[in-house]
Length: 262
Image 1: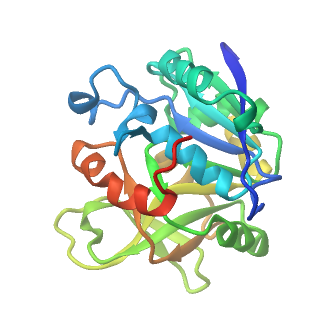
Image 2: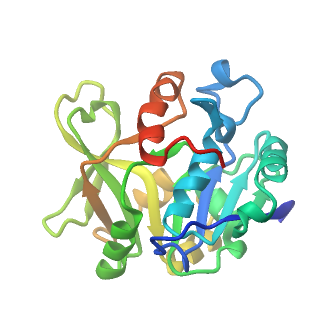
């Protein structure tokens, strides 16, 4: 790795379904859609109700017993590292190891996985886009993935207006049959990806051995039919990557995580 570091955070009592599952957060993008609002800040530090988004994310992962988090960083990575060193160290934060890997250049979502592969030690691994947040019981998601034994399981949301998103079409066995590009002319409900996934070690190895850049275009859309599963339901989720969604993020994240400081 070109750069890496570690810091340790508090692990809450309670659900422990992520205790033996590494978490990878992909957060190396340039954040061009939200740059007019954030200026020099990276998306992980976007302010939501007075706290950086990363603080909420760490609280949320601790709720499910996460012990090890890998942050795949790139653009303005030093600010995230400084935040971890400054605000997330000391005895009060004992229990969650945070590893940072810093890309030398933007590698895409699949490229970020390839770059971070050697830091991912478990089977499966929970993978999240760095601007995605879902108000969902992760333990149910993990249990489902273990039952279906797919190469990957995508967390999917049932929404009333699917025209704003790329849609996921399921087959009769509830496996993913196809992906449909975003179509603003489409009106009606549908199933969409929430940007949270569980990947088997086998799929991680395939990505690491290949040249894929985009998870969506180069991995998901080219995967053998029905090799990907979906855990679908109705829940709140948000992508904080645009000014409009960031303005609404507090309604989802505050209600789910709470406002206690990290």
